[in-house]
Length: 179
Image 1 (cartoon, rainbow, N blue to C red):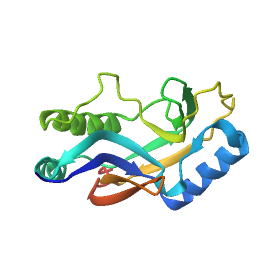
Image 2 (image 1 turned 90 degrees about the horizontal axis):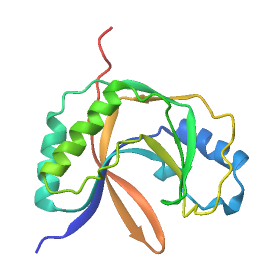
Image 3 (image 1 turned 180 degrees about the vertical axis):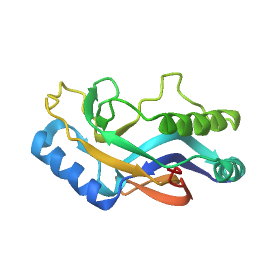
Image 4 (image 1 turned 30 degrees about the vertical axis):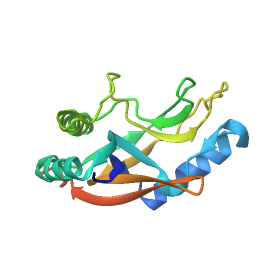
């Protein structure tokens, strides 16, 4: 029986944006809000795959390598709290069409390869806290940062010694659109 790994496709945040997000979070939320996500783990999930066998992983990597998508800009200008899921997040008020298309392609191929996909609509977001189950005051003014999406990646979620870390396994370019 082959080993399985917990995988997902995502957009990473460049180090400068990671620092801005961490500082904004520290400035606007009390320490007891929930379990903060480490700076290095900040990302925008495109498709969660769950526990994946080597065979499925190979098939999904092959599919990802054939996706013909262009790069895009994403404005990070929204924030919210999902108490049921215990997630405080940053996101976008108007997701660009290329982001929605890329996520749909990846989610569709994931489902065809036996990876459960939620029936909930895709809501692009960056998780700031987990285990935030009590009421959270969301700041009235949210940042207006730009995330330039020039690649997407396949990540592994690794839980060791009471901590989760995400490891990039492979990335694929999203070429800049022609002007």
